Length: 581
Image (cartoon, rainbow, N blue to C red; front, side, top):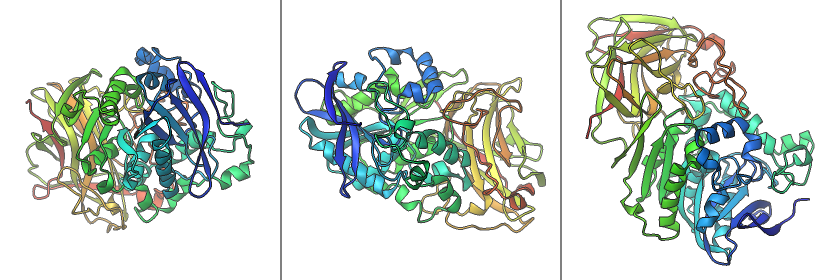
């Protein structure tokens, strides 16, 4: 039986499964970790569906093993038995006089109800949890939000509701736009993310799994509630997000409640993004740029998704931010530069640099034109030509000459294409790549995949309509609100967004642009690399695949795609070249 109780252990006062009643009578459950001494403490809250009592080590064993192997410091100063997926370790925060509150969202873990991710009901629940924490006798009335991925994404939504006791937000790799950042990249269904994520990360900790679900390694109690429901009952309490994504191929009314109101996000904000991988990078930066807060900071790093959040680098950054806004400490955070970048180099090293804005003001926006001989050049092409490729195939690769000197590319990128199809539609998968003098491709540890290229971009040709108010020359913004079919053989103009990236290109290396008709693979062979929480191998794009036959119907998407090169309408790749300060 799940009970609410309080005990002292490992230097903390722990209140297990505290009940928080919502306005509709439903009761959510939270664990509270706080200092033993009586007092009023600032709150760090996380709210989400991954099971507050589900051990990181048990649920995500290879991610944990890699993280602590790369950063053994994570193991120091903690028993690590309270570690849960993508939320703070209370043993690293409570000694610094913080109260840590972990809430199981509705329908997940020990909180009953229907599990519907990023729904309006979830946002309201989160709001009420913040307000509950703000008035507890052990709270100083200031609530900060912190966490990775889902625990970051949900912050954008609850921040839009402006709860009075919310005092600061740290979004660590949390996208803003479910449609553009997650379910549909460039209008193409990201099916593996929806289906794989749902089965392997949400349903395993759904409320009602009871005795069939995992148990807490600390208390021994079921992490999915005291009630064991039938599979039929579990299905009735779960909103099928994968089916919904298929049923809503456009950015329609289904997605509106799942998009933040940027003009309502006025709280102090620390947005931390990751260069490597097609999920959180774009949205985290978008949130920073568009949030109305006058006190906002951006940090962008590399490496695996969770690692730096738990490492000394991330904890130090987070605590400086929260100490300043939740405790009022004069620690110099007010002098923190607005943008902190970990600039990526080919040897997997990163060099920290501070900037005053994003994109960087001194950026030299540089066009590399596509030529018929598959060259990328700063000079426009001198002849016209059409180049065909199989619409669902490997596509084309365009290369620069070797760079004459070391060159930094940091910021958002874009491509202008002129293309046609033998059918009424075509999907474009763009990959920015880097090759050594010996034409060996360079890879990095992405947020998930250990062999990730420089950058990605996608666009379904029928979704080419731009939003004139939100688009810029370096960041095209597509409305995705109507389908504009192609006329077979008739060229159309396409503006493709490539997500923000950073790479220092050594002298003698080449930049490559792949224009493909399907997901990129960095090897034709099996990589043998898998993560326990994803079903596919890691071959360059992580779990983020776009191959659902219901979304990419063969009769429409398996024709012939043609790239049109002409001096008067020259296609190009736009890169953000950064000169030295």
